Image (cartoon, rainbow, N blue to C red; front, top):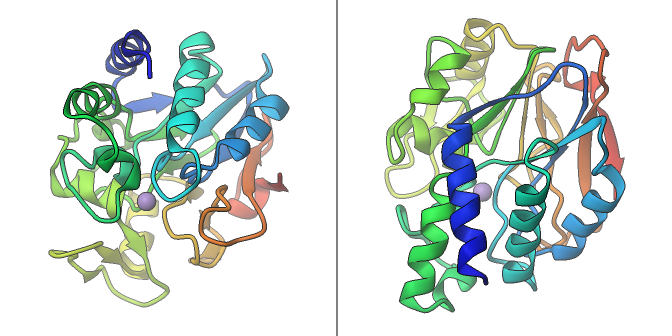
Length: 257
Ligand SMILES: [Mn+2]
């Protein structure tokens, strides 16, 4: 990987801040975990990189799949070339240097200098993207904030950051179903209901759990997965058409690429 590309990407992410505000007048394409499935990213880019679209990748670009280095390089190059058409959010796999996990095949193959260069770029990634139709996109679960704007001030490594990057949803009552002290925190329906009301949203679009139900919590929580690295046969993306009124996640179109 080209060190100059990582530095340019890092500068761009720092400039964007942790919360992306998506334009209302463009169609937004949400892409779930690509996890080393470079072909998935190529398909998405060839189909949706258009002046009237924005593409939002929901994190987890590396590890698991066959070509992590190729996938992250393709995504960073496309971001640098088309900064207002492509947005990359942070998943837990981008933060291995902050909160290590196993297996981490991509990170473990890097030389120490390369780990540092990747970390500089990937720890600067935004945490969430907000669409004015009332849709929030992030990797895992809602942070416990008062307003969407507060996401911009979330600290890397805080519990709210862990909710975003590591949080699972479970179809059960409750708030924090499992604090995830030694693993992934899991959140229930009561927490979802409280947060979606407090943030005045219609839908959450996220990824992170390859085997979660597509829709949860009255069709307001959509989980998409876009990598074949977990043995699936479908890569799913969700499309929010410009100008479409959104009442629930069912108003986003699903495409299988
Ligand atoms: Mn994940």
